[in-house]
Amino acid sequence: MNILYCCDEYPPARNGGIGTVVKLVAEAMSRRGHRVVVAGKYWKGGGRKTIEQINGVTVIRFHKRSYQSLALLLFNLFKSERNKQRKAQWIYSKTRRLLERTVNQYAIDVIEMPDYVDDFVHFNGLKSERWNCSVPKIIRVHGSVSFLNHFLKGEQNERKIEQDRQYFDQADAICAVSAFSRDFVKDYICPDRNVDVIYNPIEERWFKQTVDDQESQTILFFGKIAKMKGVFSLINAFNLVAKEFPSVKLKLIGNGNTEQVKELVEQSISEQVIFSGFMPQERIMEEIDRSMFCVLPSYFENFSMAALEVLARHKALIYTNRASGNELIEDGINGLLVNPDDPMQIAERMRLLLSDTDLRNRLADKGYEMCRKRFSTEVIIPQIESYYKELIAKCKQ
Image 1 (cartoon, rainbow, N blue to C red):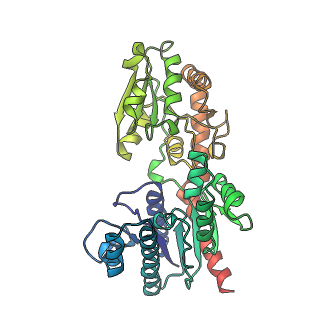
Image 2 (tube, rainbow, N blue to C red):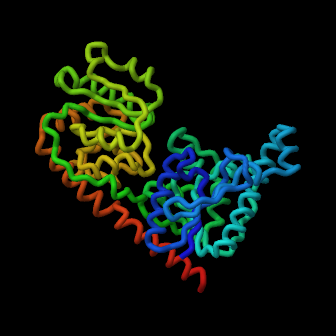
């Protein structure tokens, strides 16, 4: 197959979860003998476009000069709301034309696009032109704008839902990264469409079946230091636990509202709480290995790679019972689930793991086993490959 991934954040460009997952899947598909192309717009860079090979993947970046025109100049000069809308739609249409050329040049068989498209969501009610592409298109549900507004802000913005609906209507297939995100699409955006689920895979390099470090006295959190990630509740819970376990430390890795969170730490235990700032993945691996267990009590996770990373490193995990939490963790079997609004429950679960080595080991064993059986690249990549082939065959009928 010749596969095109539409991605505006492919590493080493600045990226988030979508870029990371697309890179993992694209390189895995290339290793399986498929021709893989990644293309998108990147606003840094002076050339019209750059093409490079990265680990067997052809990466095409459309830069600013690809979009230069008199129309765009006028949109920039006259910054009315109407011109902002027209500029966004012009860029969206131009990107589609550039991608269509890529489809033809590389004889693409199937296209995968993310559901989150910046320019599209800023149309303020303007309809997008339908991309009548010659090959089947898959929209991969990572978390659209209406999805994020609904779960993070408690808003149901009908305009954004309608924009998402217009975008999803262009897809020949819709595939979500979790049952949680599938259900949102079915309930609010495309109730009459079939939405499949294929989970994101975790790289083989994360798997390491370690022995419990009996000398470790560190509880680990990593991610954005923000209320949404459950950090406020975690600190309040640790305030209750730390005095009972004076040798135990809580280490938090990541950037965010660090100063605000520090104010929640009781003065008497301040030396037991460590803020380490940002760390690259290799360092996070090492910190997980050195920890006693990890706590990630987030309010919202569409599909958490961080949780999989803990399980793959063979560590016990206390995880959120919100969103997709119960798709990864069966409470008391391969991890522990907590309500991020309940510091008392989080504290109780931390005490349990601090006091019971056998329970930590049992949860780590089951978590590792489940992660490898359900989420390794050896399991997920063949599912994605078969999904593409089936869609191509169906669209040719």
